[in-house]
Amino acid sequence: MTRDEMLADIAYARTLAEEGRHAPLLGGAHLLFWGVVNAIAFAAQYAILEGLVPYMDGLAFAVLWIGYGAVAAIGMMVLRLRTQKKPGLTTIGARAERALWTGAAVAVLAVVIGSIARMFSSGDTSAPNAILGAAFALYGAALFGTASLSEQTWLRRFGWLAVGVALNACMFAAFNWVYVIASVGSLLALAWPGIILLKREPSAIV
Image 1 (cartoon, rainbow, N blue to C red):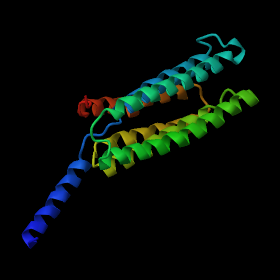
Image 2: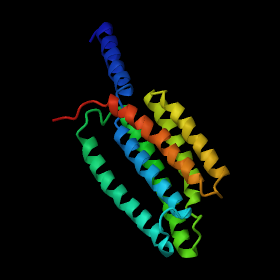
Image 3: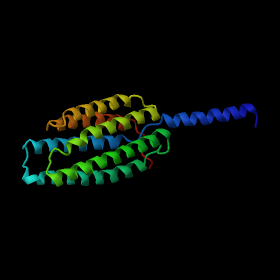
Image 4: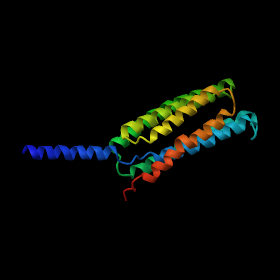
């Protein structure tokens, strides 16, 4: 192999790597799903706390969060099947996106389980308030990481938005209307970029 042929091969490999780095991300449906589901759950939590829906001696909270868990489980199974049919699963951006959001999801799940368990065990209806600041901070970190590793720098704006929601969620955690902030924040910081990513996704493999 001549020097020119070797350089040509290196240039080709570099081009493939750069194309993989800039390939469309595949997490749009996940962001949209969680943005909408979270927004509905947070709005429902606020409605229960404010007495806008029947409290039912606390049963309303159980219905809400058990239902949330069921919808989340079913939704993730459907989304996983959907993503498997998309090209580009092994690109740098897609792998980074998947790893970062998986880590964030596990961390948020730990906070959710702990907070809800505390609510039922102690009767402290404000216990789930601790979820909001931690969750949005982790969302922001995942958005920043995905933006950097995939070079989709526009995602950083949503990372800052998520961090801003986290800041406000911590500042106003003692108030019921913090769930209004979280509900709107879910639509803006998660569902909105999810819609943008969905529009840029490649078609599914038939």
